[in-house]
Image (tube, rainbow, N blue to C red):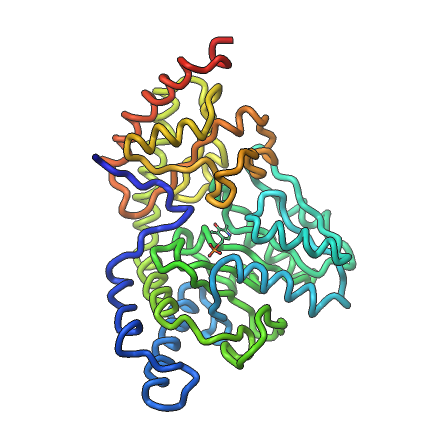
Length: 386
Ligand SMILES: *Cc1c(COP(=O)(O)O)cnc(C)c1O
C-alpha cells in the first residue's frame, strides 16, 4: 500500500546523513566527554562541533547553547529558571492561549506558586499582536513567552516586533521555536530573542535531544542538578550521539532553506486551494499567509476528526487531529477553541504537516483520498443531514 507521512509536526524521520554521523558515537567514540583522556576528548570534540552548528543556525555564540533532552525541557528550563532567579524583579508573566502544553502547564504550575500569568487571547487566525503584548505589560512583568510558530495551525507570531518591545522594556523574552527552526530563518540577535527552545526530532534529527539558546549574561538555575556539564547549566552525562545528530540535522535543515521553503509552500498551497474545491463546507484553520511552509489544517464540518484520521490511516495516510500530545483525549484542541471555533467544528479538524521529502504525488494522493473519505463519513453523519 502507498504510505504518505503527513505528521511531521509530531515528529520527523531520522535521515541517513544524520544517522551516519551518529553511528561512530554509538560505537567506537564512547568516552565520557568530561574525561580528559583521549577517549573522552573525542566525544567532547563531537559536542563542540554540534554546538557550533546549532549556534550558527540561529546566529548565536556556541557558549549560548545548552543541550538537553528536548523542547519540553528547554521550555521548562527557561520559564521556571527566570521565575526562580528573577522573581525579585517581578512575578508577572505574559504568554498566549495557544502555546504548547510544555509552556502552558509550566505557567499554570507557576500560578500555583504565586506568579500571575496573562494568557493573551488570539484572533481567528491564532495570532497575537505586539500591541496586545504592550498593553499586557506591567511594572512587575518579568517574562514574555510567545511561540515562534504554532504547532497545530502553523500561524507565525510577530516575533521580531515582540522581541524589540521586550528589549526596550527590559523584560526577558523566550520563544518556543520548536516548529519554526529548520522551517523559517531565525536570527536571535536581530530578533532580540533572549531564550529559544528547539528539539532535534522536529527537523529530522533524533528524539530525546534538544537545546535552549540562552543569551550571554542571563544566568538561570539548572532544572537538573548534579555534575558541571553544560557549564553548570544542565547536569548529566551528555547524550553524545543525539547531540551530534542534532548538529548535523540542523545544518542540513538550514541548507538551501529558501528553496525548501518555496517548494514546501507550493505543495502546502496546492492542498489549501484544491481541497475546498473538492470538499464542500470546509474551513482552513490558521493564518492564510503568515503560516509555516509545511502546515495544512482544515476543519471538515459535520464529521469527527478522529474518524477522518482512522479512514486516512486505512488508506495509508498519516495525519493528525491536532497535537500528538492531546490526541487520544477527546477534548478538542485548546488552540482551535482559543481561535473561536465551536467544539463541533474543532472536533472535525485534520492537520497535515509536510516535510521536504513530501512529493507532488503524495499531495495528489491526498487530494484523491480525502474527498472520498469526507463524503463517506458525511453520508453516515446525522449532523450533515440536518
Ligand atoms: C514538539 C513540541 C514541543 C516538545 O518538544 P519535545 O522535544 O518533544 O519535548 C514543544 N513545543 C512545540 C511547539 C512542539 O511542537
